[in-house]
Length: 97
Ligand SMILES: [Zn+2]
Ligand SMILES: [Zn+2]
Image (cartoon, rainbow, N blue to C red; front, top):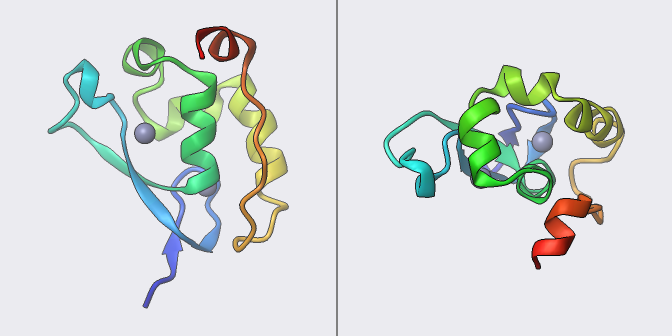
């Protein structure tokens, strides 16, 4: 069955991808991972740099507690699992790309 559960927004029936809680670039290749739906995964990497993730946001609990993520999670939980919503990028990431 191709029905998965996102560990961050807790929605069921979403397609999930593996997120390295400590990014691979920061040495997290063999570290803890989480199953995240595509919007959650994209949102994390749109909001935070790998350095921020490794330093402050390396658990689901820390991600959930982050202000920016709370705003996002409130919204995504209302979205149907089959829809891939358009996401906003944070200013700092927009500058980089
Ligand atoms: Zn999710
Ligand atoms: Zn990731």
